[in-house]
Length: 260
Image (cartoon, rainbow, N blue to C red; front, side, top):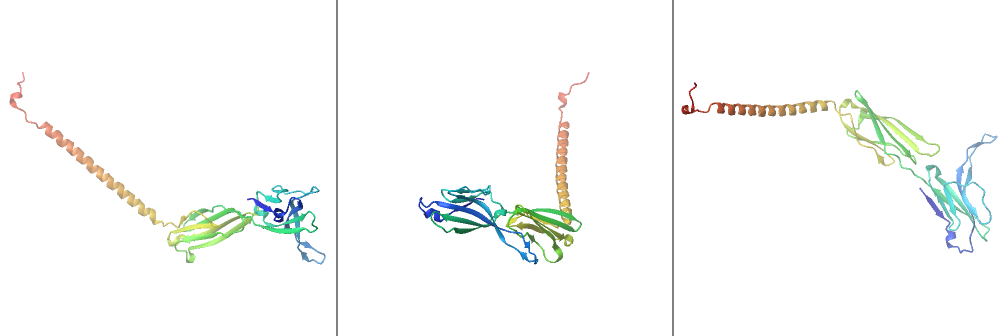
């Protein structure tokens, strides 16, 4: 993600009224501090991001992912992360003007969650499903969707785990649900995170389904075998009848010769 910001007044100013100073900073919260009276204090500090001065060089360390164009007074930020979200301030002082103007910029960076994946583990009449998604910002709630009889004790959420990386601020979330399959009813389930939905999965597949399929396949195979046996029997019978007719051909006595 790239952020580009241009000082508005600079675009309306002539070349003689060049920018004297542009300082781009970000407001950061400071850690709580304790006084001698044990009073919790909290303030805000500022961190230098980038900027320039027309008469002298700014020696403060600049952010590597930022740049400021002197001629156009354009501030650019590249390779933005969720941790770059926050409030930025731009201080500008024009040549010939004693006052310093301050512009506040609110930057919000988002990251899409990965497509949720579901892992299934079934034993006896119970199935455990774990849905996980990672790399998203800001925080989002993981949602389960069940198609079928989802009332009563059919299923319940066991736990939800949520972790945030302290450096990138990206969230990794997972959730585990338990299904009671003793009712023998098949259900279709999916989970979603940040608007991204997982694949649909069947849960609690009835045990009697394989028993129905197996006899059906055996019946079809037996029927085909019977048809093949009948065809083979008819073919053999036809061949025998053809041989019998050939052996029973009438012979003219005149064609027979006496054996010497």
